[in-house]
Image 1: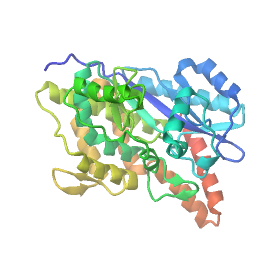
Image 2: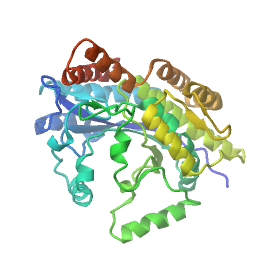
Image 3: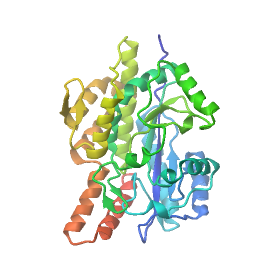
Length: 378
């Protein structure tokens, strides 16, 4: 089947945690005036999240990642400026280093009331934030076809993004603890495989007609056809503390999507592997991030993430050129060389502990680092 050249537009959604700059605790009851001012300045690009200590922003769709960066920098800067008036600051991290989920308050919104009612404690533990990247694919069938193939690359993207090593004041031992919390919900993890958009729609309709949910926006897979936009929405990644790391990952995902379309156009396709294998790499990305490599299924062996990234860059170089994001794509190398937010958080924590700080004092230092890095280079 021939498809028209997709738009390949790109947009990014990020969720932030709001912290009290004095205590570094999460702000469980931020003033409504703060959100109202954000809304007045950002309009429909800002939204409340499930917990009152969270806030979400979403860029407009653009042709290039460079344009997305400008939008995202403005959004981060605006939220930070408004929050500062109230003694608060946003942190772009997927878990808070020490605040307790039991102390948080739920946002008063119908959708969230339904979620809390249906999911109970599983929902109340959702003190986590993520980054979602949308790439424009106008054709329904193409979105499903690419979704089936792109799942292979999701662990690679997750490994580059990790920012949630702490949970309730302790080093979890995982670079991404966020997914361990999120995976307690139903309809998470790797997406199912579908032969057509019609088949996908029939499966969704069974759950809608059965009263399980209202629409496909309550499918929380690692990648999904967006229920709102003609995009394929990648959702597996942690939120990146440094904005340029977020743009590097967005560029890599955009390039992978275009590469898979390009293969399809040439009557080729990426080999589809069983979820059993991809799930193993997903676990390795959660546990180790970029440190211990992922499984190359063709070779049947673990390969360093640096080598896998070089292969990905080589495969998508022409896509990066076409999408005008070569610089952003190559920045992924910097992440591998210098580490993710999770590495920097752990370095701050371990350094403080070695100097005699208490565990709480050490995690306070991690929050300070996150506050600074979230608005760096904006």
